[in-house]
Length: 480
Image (tube, rainbow, N blue to C red; front, side):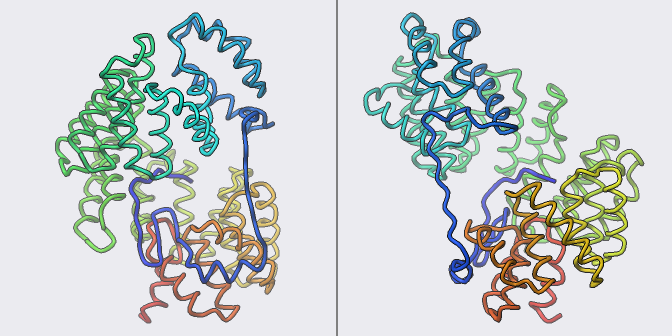
């Protein structure tokens, strides 16, 4: 189950909306187990992986081509683009350069490839390629936009601002070829809007997103972003009107009430200020009232109730949903999580077993069931949990959730060394989910590292994500 989150949060030692950032002492405790390194260089490996990842990259290439190149040039580049699909950069560049020599509608090949690297999240390679190009071509506005996008992705917001300003100055000076205007201006405008939002220049950000919508009238997300910016500015009434208009124009956009609620949830201190909880509740309730037939209204409200540690209310809301909505995969998973929040493991086991009969290949249900079976204290159920956890970790070896569950099973089985080996690379990333942090804290306690365990439990309790053991941990920490 996934959900988009906005806005950075840091708490304690420390936490974020995405997870717990490990203290150095905890990481040091696990470092002796293994050293994990990862490096990737890509120059000739843009689209060469096999399997699903290869398909994803080809899709991203197709989207980039449609967004950046004129249709007539795409047709002329047919053979060259097929070379790029298989990673033959030399033949691609040859065909691209030949066409570029007679066309002013193509971006520089380095800029195009740099943007492709960005879409593939190959940031270091994109940065190197673009910076080397800009050293010799300092008046290419599109290159500066691409570098600004990289700066945004890597948290260097002042650099992104400077790159966007310089790119806009080049455009104002007529340095952008007219044939590239309709392709380059939307990217520049979106970059400027996002930079303004990050700098809390709400009015400027809103106007730039609305300008982006004028440039791309078929893309409702630009109007959606303008409405979200008005929420951040505190203009909830104005935001609601704009978001309703956006959804009227583009019915595939999220419900306006939910958008406002989720922006408030992401950007207010509702954990400490009850007034924010009441305000978010009111927008969630309005979404359910105005759109009773929309699945997202009920499922998002249930998600919020669990985020704010109100599982009984989430179950009560579930009971009011229509039968088709109750059968939805995400709603079913939320109902199972609500049982875990209440430590009602027998109900959780029953619900998850029934869900797996309907969704036998669903990794989330299988992972949740393994976690529930561990808590039963029954030897046979622990064995079943181990089988599920082992299978899940093989099916998704890069998943933090499945690896942490397997470590938790091993901790319960007394295999503390293997459990630590599994958790070490997760801790070394520097950030974990609250659930993983909880499992690691329990392992540290069994190893006699009580101070580190206590700090990690406190950090987990202060995260904003779904965390069924939060109430239990808070009772331990406060003694109540």
